[in-house]
Image (cartoon, rainbow, N blue to C red; front, side, top):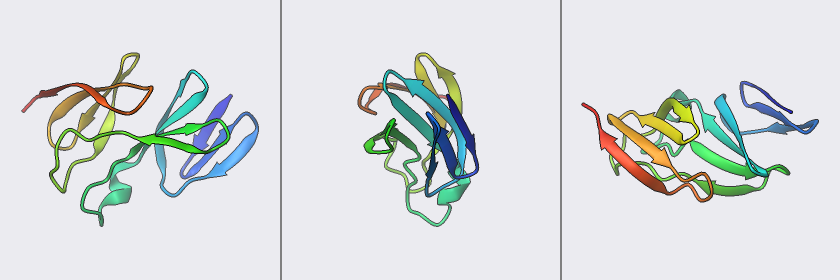
Length: 109
């Protein structure tokens, strides 16, 4: 069972304290994919805020962003299966949940 609130994530009864507030979580096979609040990275050049962890809180990957623009970050989920998100720079992006690589991106503006 997975529960989250702000920057805390409870996985299989273990409480993790992560560096940013969480807006969504996905279970994938034996991993946990976390979408951090895009506003938490306002002081960064680019905020790669989709991160995959093992169930023991080891970081496996950080998802690619669709652009190299300093303002880009993921703003929310479109779907969990397939794993699809929308970015601040107007892209709908499908991510490979095994490695965080972009499978497909579509400019929507």
